Length: 241
Image (cartoon, rainbow, N blue to C red; front, side, top):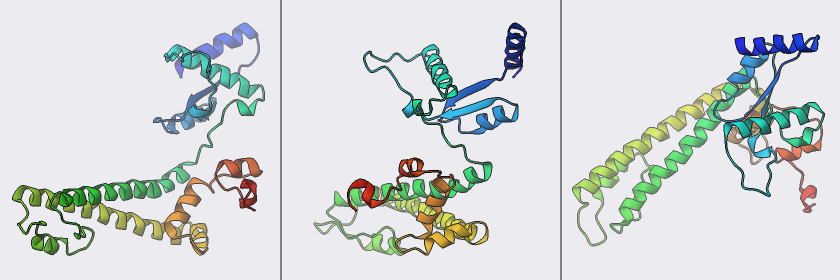
């Protein structure tokens, strides 16, 4: 900030008029803390969708910090000139909105991890010709003790222990999913009545309603273009009406 202020004072002295500082960066691992930090200090910042920035397709694209900074500067200048289609500007959520979406995103990761553990267990047992083991049932330990290979042998000890540990990981993830879902229900009932209303629609449960509310409907849609960009176009727009 000291360097930015120094450069701004130099520009004001050279131009003999007030200077407004603008900046931008690509959306990524930095999240939105930097955007809030800059805006709180009077800098007009934009968060850009990296995939929407135009690149030269005629030549192999070099990747250096200097070239990336020059491309971002050209994009920022085009936006300031009033060319909104030069790239997509990310809608920055508030702190509360960003925090609320953590539950649905964590649940999505846990569901994916649950599938990985289940597939791993079933894959291990498939090597012994076993296809009827249900690791997501609470009696998985009893099931495991009665398992026999397709040729009538007991499970090898090392394989059995590995499956036990994998089942424990699976059930740890299952318990985490139930915990997150309980938090979702409590939040929907106390602080987000819109999620409950949306879940009353046929075919939409509480989880999908939470995702749609936190990921899509936190924005203001002024016309059909941003609505279509969010994937909410009506059927006739795709020729099915």
